Length: 222
Length: 325
Image (cartoon, rainbow over all chains, first blue to last red; front, side, top):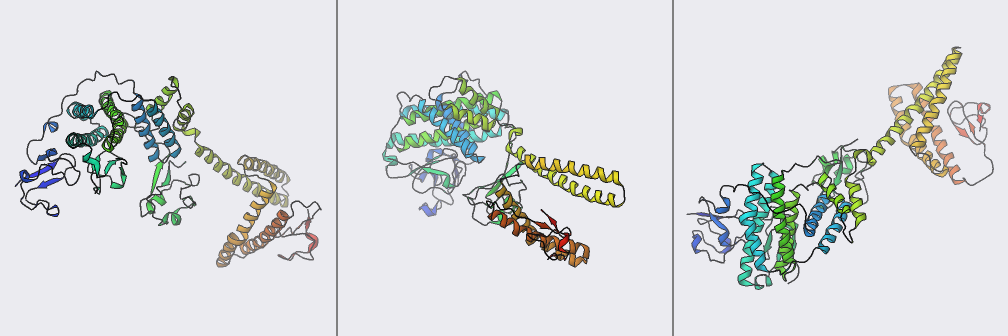
């Protein structure tokens, strides 16, 4: 019988073994799992799984050749500067420099405040950007980073690509289910890689970056 | 200078307190659990001993960050733009999921820009970014905070307080050396006089006085001279340590070694230091009294009295030998 691997967190569903503790008997075929079955580790949809040994999906193919970037990225937007400052605040925190960390956070707040709000925000626009990241942004950046063997960049890209795929999965579900999807359940975000977990029982470690779950932040509100 | 210093992650600390046992300077023994950087000599003993892994050695200066190619920076910045846009869109949408998406994109944006040349807060990229902010016409920018960051992160090694500390250590080393040389030359001058070598005796005396002026200057520059009340307290502490801890040990060792001359020298000094400590205490308590007090010193053992005794209570020298102050 076959095995199926979660493309987000690497969980393996083995048809021979099943998941007896969740009532899935050994020998249960992949096709017989309900369509709304999700990865027990990270909550990814059934469609995010790949059959082990089969040729990988399109995103795992040969790296796409690096393309030039026509976009002018010289000037950062205010919100990008804000993210730069919160990143540097974290850097200072890691070096045990609380004063500098607080100053960077103050700058980050300032840039966030003066950043103009998005025009016509919508979930559809989010989906379009996520799709573009998965189809263009990540494959291109990974190709470039592989070419120059930039391990640090590849690490960041691996994490955020998985987080983005999970985001896509959530957004697609939200399109069908609406607010009911998160109504009676907790939503957590991993503060290290950004992975979003929907469900009441947090995994012990983040399925993407493997940090212990006390690094997750619960999202308050409705 | 130590290149690293120890820091404790208070969240990981399980109060095993092995750091207290192994730290040679007491830097880990603080009320708020934050290791005292000014005492830490960077030996790493505490980090090695800590069973909960709560102490790590942090470098004063980080190595330069990994260089990034233009192509990587450009690809990462393009992703950053997308993530930042998603953060902005999600911020304008209602609900818990949108809030989570906003947060998630911020965290990804941070990670992506970190790998686009902004890993180290001390890097030239960061300093340049901060400086560029001051050139921009940004209304409401907390300029003072930007300037503080440039100053704190762009600090050169020479400007660090640690360097001053090292100079202070050097001043005290020099003080100890000069003070010792002064006493040594006085001893040599006495010997030269006994031998009738008067010119050599003169030179030793002149040099001894010269070393005294060196020592005094160094001691003052090191900031060791306080108010008379403070100086009396310091003197009490020094004498007390000597008669309570240092000399008792020396006395025992001289006994064990059968060195009678050393035993005599240590015993005299130990007893005299006890008297000195007592007199310093009295002087501190009566610092504001104006009536004149006279002191009489035993030239043999160093005992000091406030009257002329029949004979020295420590070494037995007749009272007429005492020197008045």
